Image (cartoon, rainbow, N blue to C red; front, side, top):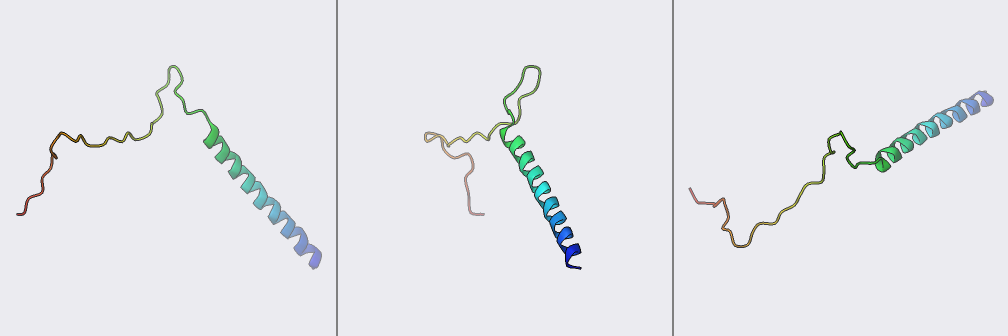
Length: 66
């Protein structure tokens, strides 16, 4: 009985490590894949541009008490 449990536990650990390795490989491919646009293809989505409000302009929305 003890021998049967050992072989199942080893097989289960092998499956766990195989799935973890495949996940790590997929994560590395996604992280290090080229994200630059290639000729003939559309550019991928870029980062959000942040703009600070102009200091000389008045605010466009004013809060008023109703």
